[in-house]
Image 1 (cartoon, rainbow, N blue to C red):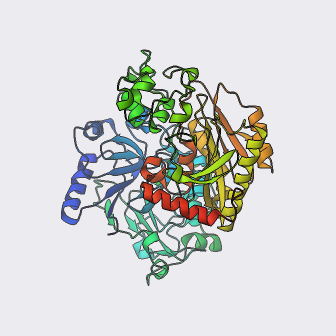
Image 2 (cartoon, rainbow, N blue to C red; image 1 turned 180 degrees about the vertical axis):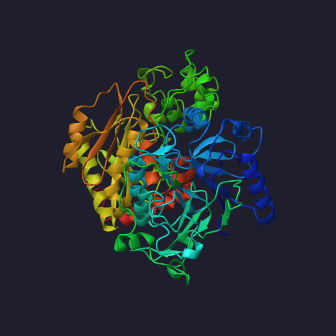
Image 3 (cartoon, rainbow, N blue to C red; image 1 turned 90 degrees about the vertical axis):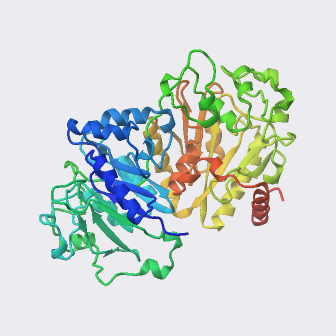
Length: 595
């Protein structure tokens, strides 16, 4: 497969007509290119530029290739981005950007995602001592970037240290210029490429060596679109993803490679503390990383009572708050599990036995028929009841007296498994004592199995008050990532507007008992057991639109597999699933408490 071809752009400053005319020309003469990444200020400096800018935002003018931007400040930014943030299609974790319009995506906060095989990291906005909704990054964004990234566009203080003086733009060697926080981050996460804007100049620095890493970093600063000095504002790259490079290729250092500008600053003490954080200055710099999205809004409350087919079937509705039907996350979850929409919406389906979808009466509450009416059919329709014709038995890997283990459908990673009680129970926190012990034995066995592979395991469960058959998800992660799990979940919770309750106990079984004692059957709950035994939990309010795939989405970000946040993107054929289950059973055999 050919290496991806990416265009990079400096501050757009709202001059989208000029920018996309140039992009179309370059794409025609030297393309095709896969995407455009914009650093620096994206929005206009003045209201006079809004008409041309809005032609693109509102769809009257077309954007030629997928475009991603991070400089979320300037005239019109608050109005445009507030609407984008409220769009129901942008709720939850959008690690690869919030859609503004066709081919235009806003990378908010900080984050990391895969773009045609390349790991793209970003930090959006300017550093500011005050808290503001748009246009500034927070310490949480910085911490999230540190925890998630193994690699990182903002101009870092000291980047010109040790560089050839002839190549440094006039005035840019001043050690007070730039953002010292970015210097710290870049020195720590060591990207292969660091793209910056907002300083008004073009600068392609010599590659520099990284302390504690074998690869070099290339720093490129781009000038604003349409600048009077006609400095370069667009740049093309075609980097081979590191995952496809040999060790020799990664280690290659060009003849003009310099030492790290950040280690140079530490050794000489030059500047005003390039690697020391300054808390009260404002810097117009951004760089690429992962997006932890904003708090969910309630949309489409629809007093008419009917469910919105578009939302239930796809997870989004273009009408948003204007929709006259209900956007029900629990109904959406049931739809994903194959339940008939007419059955969810009306309590019955006129197609009867000819319907290809499930007619499972498992929930209570508005929009769902009562549990008592369907209790006799529950085990026949449930995906997890062993007596059900719907159960996918080829995924089952171990069966105990009270619980069984199965590979997850659409796994996030290899050996992503579920622990499921055999009895149709609503959660794994209020199990009978003998069933709880069976589950704990499987948890302990999985921990030992993954430990031997140099991995830790994260357990999480979504407990719906309209509970279906309980299942506890187990996702292995590299041991090197284990210390970041609790921090990432806490940061993600803060972005969604809540704080986790914490239960710390060296004994996982005891911690689960404590959580189970406070479980309210009339409220939904999410909890996650992180490596080390700590359990984070959140009781979901009645009107809170909590993302039911929250646990998976956060771990997808941690593992840099944003494309796998939705299980439907990871589905395998039955033959592939069977082989993976057989392989897991073979590897797990010596740890299996039921073998």
